[in-house]
Structure formats: C-alpha cells, structure tokens
Length: 396
Length: 163
Image (cartoon, rainbow over all chains, first blue to last red; front, side, top):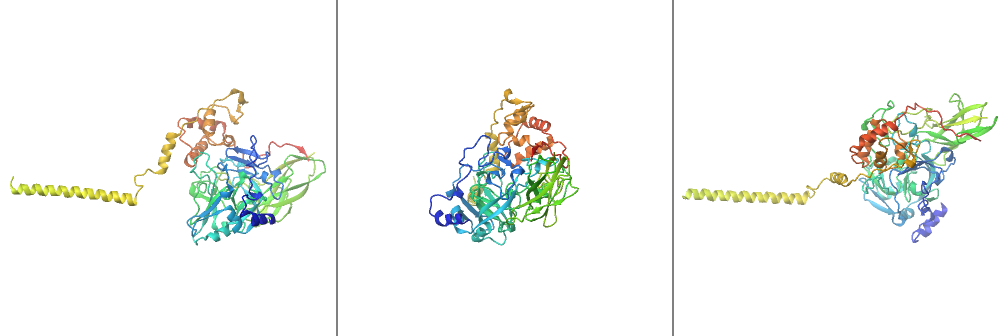
C-alpha cells in the first residue's frame, strides 16, 4: 500500500485526477455481446437484467480471487455515469450526533487505510439444489469470492461523526436504480447490528485487488462486511444510516435474507414473524482443483485442493472422502491471510482401482460444526445451502 | 306592529348576526389552524396518488410477435422460453422489467407462481395483470413446474477430460 499512500499523500488533494485505483475498469471497455462489463466471459450468467453471474468452482482456484472472476449479484441497475470527484458518502440516522457528508478524497485523506481479504458469499449461494425449489436466481456453487479490499474502517468514520449510545444497527443506501425505472424506489438497503459494523474488518472500500472496484461490484465505493451474506455489503455506496432500531430498508423484512426461527419440513409456509435475519454464513468449502470430470490414469496420484470458510469463524479441519462418505481423509489446511478470509486446503489422492468416484469435501469450523452431506434445513427462499461439494472423477 | 313584536324582531336579527359572526369566526379559526399546523390535511396520500398515476399512465407493452424462424425444438431461442399458449404474455409482461432468464431458471406450482406475482406486486412495482394473470400462471405452472429432486441429486452433465 506504499504506492497508494504515496499517491494519496502527495497527489490527490490538489490533483485533478484520482489515482489509478479509482479509474473504473469495466466502464470504459466496450460491452461485448452478452458480456458483463469487466467480467470474464467464463462466468455463468444467470440473469442479464439485472446482471447476475457466478464463477465455476474450478476458476476459484486462487487464494485471492482475480477481479474479473468475482461473481456478480445485482438487484437493480448499477449507476451508468459515476462522477468520482463529486461522489459523496453521507452518515446520518437517528443515532448520529449530526449527519456528515464526506467526499472520497476526504475519506482517503482523513482516515487510516486498511486492507483485508474478505470472503463475500451471496446468502442464496447453492439455492438451485433446494427442494421444493425456492424462487430467485438459481445459484450453484460460485456466488462466492475472496478478494482484497482497501479502504477505511467504518468504525473510524463513525467515531469521527459521533454516534449515540442508542445505536443498534446500520443500514446502507446505494446509487443503483430499481428495475421499474422508478427513481424514488430503493432497490435494496440492508445492514448489520452496530457490533458487526464496528469490527476492524468492516470497511468503506474504494479498491479491490489494488484497482478500482469493478463497476458491477460497486464502483466507486462499497461497504464491505466479510462473513455475512454479501447483501450486507452495499454497492455504489452513498449513505449509511446509524439506526436506533433494527434497520427496516427494502430486503430486510419479509422472507428476504431470512430463515425460519426453528427447523421446518420442506415446503412449509412460514409466516413473516417466524423468520429471523441471517447473520454469519455457515461453514462451507469448495473443490477448486481438479475440475469435475477428471479421468485419472491408472495408478496415478493427483492433487485435490480448494477453499474453505466459516462466516465469522475459522475453519479448523478439512477432510475429503472418495467413497461416498464412508472414510474421510484429513487435508492440509492453511490459516487465513486475515480474519474473515477463506483458507486454502489441499491433499493428494490415489484412486484404488478402475471405476467411478466422487470426491466429497467437508469443512469443520472452530466450534466443531461441519458441513452436511445432504441439503441442510429447508427454508422458503433457499438460503445457506452449505452441503458438501462433490466432483466426479474416474480411473481409466 | 307593536313594540313587543319590534323588540322580538330586533332580538331575532341580533341572534342571526351573532350566529353568522360565530360561524365566520369558527371557519376562520379552522382555516388558520389547518393552514398553520396541518398544511397537508387535504393533500392526497403520496403512495395512493402514485398508485393512481401508475395505473392511469401504464400502458401494457405491445404483444411480442413470435417469429417461427426463432423457434427450435419448441424453444424460443432469443429468450429460452418454452413455446406454448401464453408465451407471448410472459415475454411482454415479465420481460418488461427483468430478463426472462429469471423465469426459465425457476420452478414452481401455479400457486407458487401466483405468490411470486403477488410478491412482485407488493414490493417490486408490478402492475395488476388483469386477464393476463390467469394465462401467465397457467403457462408457468405447466411449463415450469417443480420436480422432486430429493435431498441430493446425482452429479449430472459431467464433461470427462484426461487430467
């Protein structure tokens, strides 16, 4: 971050232009047919209006996900013209002493910069497996990424603004517009309890992987909160309200990002008041190598590797099985780069004889909670599917 | 006219004047209070006005024409929709706001599709579908019905390659 500090320290205050980090990628490139600005055409597009696309698991084979491979989950239409020079962030709400508005330059100049690798996973990742099915984008495995985010801590900003003792929640607002084109209709406005908001890793970020945030992931400013459904990380951020009650913006209530308070049989109609807000995401892992469908030469040994994460917690054990869960082999598991980053794991596998196999992966978190082999508890909107990832392999 | 009746008439006149005066004062007081403290007392509720204008202004998009050249194996290639009765209503109505991928990737019973429509009407600004609703729900319930996939499916569509 030395370069960023140098740029910010010596140039930004008076310069006409922002550093490279704030030059948009994706906006300037001509949009290709059926392509998402700034994104690899290898992403699987689930929806073109609004853009929603996921990453095939074998392309998530990095500790730090490259920007063009990070999934896209949009609820509305991203702002088309972004004026970085005049972009502002307002902190308001019942529980601030006085609302304050900051320009991006002020954020960069007035607060310490921090970088964290943060795992962002869509609450509905894995929805496609639910039975009975749940409505919405039918995510497979790839609505997850772990990228490096750079910005300032929300807690530093809130300290400067001054918040009252009665603060219980924050809620964000962004510059995206509703699909109906109604300029007054808020697309999505979610948030987290004040305790989560004040964690060190909760950032107001202007850079992802040391470059401007991709247009589809929130350029030029994003609230990033690792470990919780990625919908709490508000994109195209313009405002954060510090609330004296649970935030009540669109997609905080009803069935949105909520699950039943107690386990229910699949297909149950659950009344709104029996639902609770999803907080930390559950323990989960993916196999990023090999890609499913590998045919292994007779007697060959191959590496199996991937990523594991556990919301607010750390993953403490990683295992795989090649016999449909009868026997489990412990894998090597790295520590996260920082809290709330996913962890790399790997092991060597030798198949015993000719035939069809599945490699199943299972992570266990620091509280001893492991991934299920089948779908976890059914919920009406199909959230939190952390069933074990399986790939097919064959020995020739 | 005797004095008595003259006095009575005078009293009646006085009462009338006082009454009218009082009425005028009450009205003035009301007008003052409303203007000063409740200026929007007679304003329409914004939400309701908006709904009204939405319904008045909204013109249903023209019916999409199906071009037989764009249909292969019963699928309308540009949208991916199954060609069946009601497909044009689905294209024009659902496609007005979001891509039709959102239709083709979802599965629900007629009751489930109805709930999705109601949810979009309550929260996402979808208008009253009128006669089209039944056609659309029938089409979706028939062509995009759920299948029982159990608690876990077999791994499907595996593309084998040599590692």
